[in-house]
Length: 232
Image 1: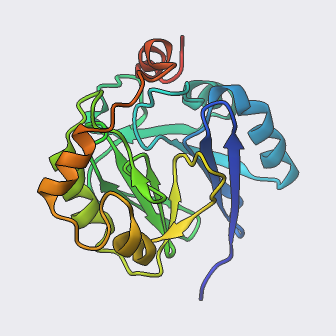
Image 2: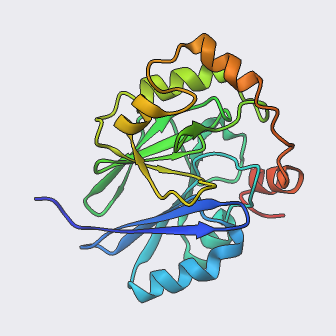
Image 3: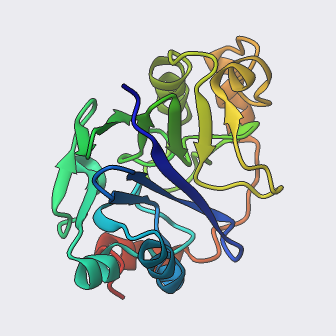
């Protein structure tokens, strides 16, 4: 029997961050993926309204563009914070590795290690959906010029861990700057501007080395705070 999942996508406009709530309808247990510190009240209101208990807060990586809500959520709701063990963050509760799974109610959330944007990037697979953080974005991918970024590593992560999923798997990214809500693995495998249509690793490395992106606006405050689970 397929249980019904409660699903909600939130958008934080300053950093264009998507945060996701997944919950099991039976047990009312919930997880938040990539919570933003400034938005805690919004999440709290939604959880209360839907009568949900927050069990876990998952970060897909140590963010450079916003401060994670992990610590505040943990203090307020007693939820466990989940990060990859390579994140260099000491204050997490649960440190996952590739293919670790987290169970909420009857839902299994599988972690897939997808480094390349950062060392700790993890995508989460559940019920025909994948939450890709900043590894794979809609028609793009995370930058590889900061925070242990490496284009060759990211190329392998996306091909081995994400493009290997079924075509109809829905891709929910950590950000989108053009208002798009989601994509699919098939769509990205075929049409992603940087990786699609069988683009070679060499071509990808070339593209990534010529992006000339501006310095991340919030990195100097966000990174140290996020290494402390959002405690400034």
